[in-house]
Amino acid sequence: MKDIEPGFREALIGYLRKHHSEICRHWFDDIEPSQIKDGVLRLVVREPVQLRYLQRLGGTYFTEAAQNVTGRLLVVRFVSPEDEARFEAKGTLPAASDAESAERPAWLDEQMLLSPDYTFGSFIVGPGNRLAHAAAQAVVAKPARAYNPFFIHSGVGLGKTHLLHAMCDALLKAQPSLKLCYLSCSAFMDLFHEAVKAGRMTDFRNRFRTADVLVIDDIHFLSKHEQTQEEFFHTFNALYQLGKQIILSSDAAPSDIPDLEERLTSRFSAGMVARIERPCYETRVSILKTKAELHGMQIPDDVPAYIAAKVDTNIRELEGALTRVRGYAMAMGLPITLEVARQAIDGEGPSRSGNAPSLQAIIDSVTRYYDVKLTDLLSKRRHKSIAMPRQVCMYLARKHTRFSLEEIGGYFGGRDHTTVMHAVRTIEGKANADTKMQAELGSIEQDLLERSGR
Ligand code: ADP
Ligand code: MG
Image 1 (cartoon, protein in one colour):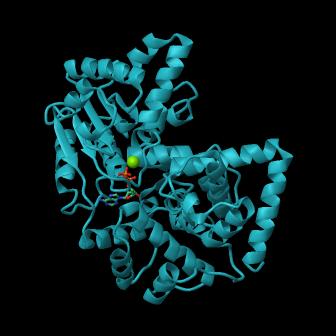
Image 2 (cartoon, rainbow, N blue to C red):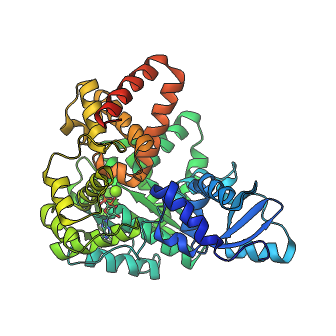
């Protein structure tokens, strides 16, 4: 520990909070700086899901912070306690961790998209989700022996994805070598079609039929896709017969998924089917408090109470409202109070101020430029005429505000952080390749900065 000065961690995290608050989480306080050796600063991270997240998204930020705090040219490596122990014994780190290896199989890639924000610890239990939560914990305690398959369904934004990620996290924690395969139904369908096209069905089958646990989010997307349903039916049977756990989520109960083969409907219903209902007022208040804490926001108790009373549709919208309040307070340079929350939610939103553009200002500029409606932008519609302006909004929000990927996704129609990441990359890519796009962005940004009074 010779190179690490007392107070180093605080300085490091302090730098990140000041310059990159959007990526900060309260659990950064658990990161243990170990040593600087040969220009490499090792940071030990105990929780596997947090480790993977940092390896994937944290490197540049932490390296920048470490260089600024120490004044030395160094790079950051996030390591597990096991890697650290190996380093102390042998003086070397593994050649490349999973996160850095280009050779890793695609299913591991997906697995690494598990959000460290979605754990059992941050999942608030209330009357609406108590059964689903209890069943999820039973499955994690005894994979394939409690409920198989385990099928969760609910309307949008009520916590299905959160619960699936929490289960994966807990399963991997209990058994790190578990071959856990987590993916969205659309990823499964894409892989299937690619495999058919490339004539690589054997690889495809090997990949899925050798999993210990198969988790597929949003399985209702199988609706109408007869060929994929057929393949999934065989995957399901193969795993089931081997005594492997299958976990599925959907926006409807098995029998309510339109155009799903009867043999799948009956298999999906054969284990435990748990439905998540909308949260009650008390649960909404607790969720808001937990989310605010996760992002290090200071809010008085009457603010969650106010937001929870106003928004009762789903949790994603609840988080969207919290984001709006935070954005309004930031733009106005005010602390978050009940009055500020009222203005942000009921009022017009911030207009002219000398600060960073607000999400509202971004929406104003983009809707005006592309002549699209606000409701379309915030809707689920995927038509290109709407999807592109929506991606531009996400890109601008990422560039000009300090909101996190999750917050931006929540604001623009309840999308997750990977969608926002994808949007930012898409628009960047287009702007690099195409001068027309550059010019479009230029004029939107000019309008935006004028509106924000800069
Ligand atoms: P779904 O997959 O059902 O559409 P998500 O799992 O994406 O919904 O949840 C939407 C948002 O609401 C996420 O940010 C999630 O963390 C949050 N959320 C949902 N349920 C809970 C809960 N019980 N406790 C805390 N946060 C929750
Ligand atoms: Mg989901």
